[in-house]
Length: 85
Image (cartoon, rainbow, N blue to C red; front, side, top):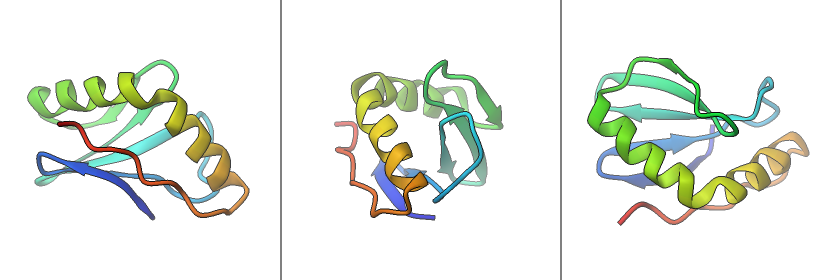
């Protein structure tokens, strides 16, 4: 599962040919969750502070995430996305 971004100890990954709806996976310490790109629905457990950072990042990079989702379904290399600063 390729890593597409990393910031503040949060790792963002996306699987190739993963199931719909378009989403990405986040890891932080011992927590794992997925976030729906289009509506922000979270599945899994994640500290509120980490989620706040991820949603800020999501708002900045939604188009790039959708592009990576399409690349992943064509089994093409994913683009790195700028971390939150």
